[in-house]
Length: 401
Image: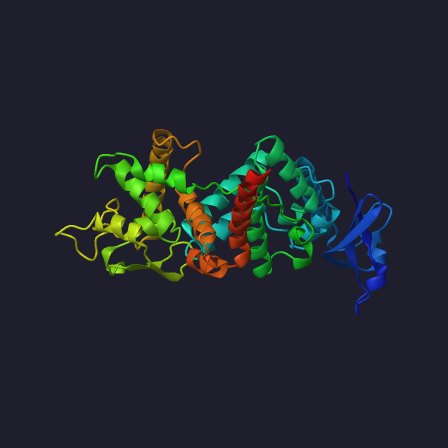
C-alpha cells in the first residue's frame, strides 16, 4: 500500500515568506505530490511531528484540517485497494486536487443518456449487453475510466472467451461498444486521448463462412407446397424474393409498400444504412409480388402483409420491436421449411442475401454492381462472395481429377 507524508515545501516560498504544505504519496519507490492549500512560515511547522506548532494562532484548526485530509486520503487509498487497483498513488493525487477520473458505469449511463437520439436501437441494445458483461466481469464493482488499460482489456477478453464462451466476433462486438464509450469520453475531453487503450489493443475479427443456397436448393424451397397466405408461405416468399431482388434485408422487405413498386422495379430506402437503391426486378421476383396484389390494395399497404398499416413506424422503438419480432418468427419458420425441403443447412433470412450475391456473381454480374445493389460501403465486403464463387469453380474442375 502507498504511504503518505506531509511536509513544508520551502522551495516555493511566497512573497509573505510562507511555504505550502504538501502531501507526498510514495508507492513502488515512486513519489507523487499535491498541495494541501495551507501556507505556513517555516518557524510555525514542526517537521519531526509533522504538525503546526502551538505558537501559531490557528494551530488547532489547521492541525485538525491536516488530520482530516490525511484521513480522507487514507480512506481513498483503501477504496482503491478494495477495487484491486494496485497503482493508485497518481489517482490519489488527482483526488486530492479534485481531478478524480470518472467512474466507468457512471460515464456509461451518461453516454446512453446523450446518445438516445443519435444511435439506432440495435446499437444501443448491443452496447447494453456489453456493459452487462463488464458488470459480470467486475462483480458489479465500479472502476475508474483510466483503469481501463490494455492489461484490463486483455483480462476482459480472456474472461469473455473462457468464462462466457464468446467467440472472436462476439468479443469484437463487445469491445467495439467499450471503444465507442472511450472515444466519446475523449471527445468530451474527460479522458486523455494519449491514454486510449485501443491505440495499443487491436480488435480481432474472423471471417466466417457465408451460408448460401445453391440453385438446386433454392428450387426445392420454391417448390414446397404450402397453404396460400399462411405465415410460412409469406416467409418463404419473402426469402425467395430477396434471393432474386438484390439480397434485400428482412427489415427492408417487411417495410416494402406498394408505392415503392411500379410494376418492374422497387425503390428501397434501406433501414440499416439510410441509402436509397433502385432495383429492376427479374420476372420471378415480379411474380412473387403480384401474388399479393388484390383489388383492395392501396399504395400505403405493405406488399408482404405482416406489418399493420395503422401503426406509426416512424417511432424507431416501435419499428425495432416489430422487425425484431417478425425476424424471429420468420427465422423459426425458415428452419422448419429447410427440413421440409430436404435442405441440410441452417436456414435464416440473411442466407437469402448471401444466396443472391453468389448467384449474381456466378451469373456474370460485375462485382461493383453487386456491391452497389447490396449497399456495401466497400467492395472488399463483396469480395468475400467472389471468393466463394471461385471456390465453387475450383470444385467443379475436380471432375477432371
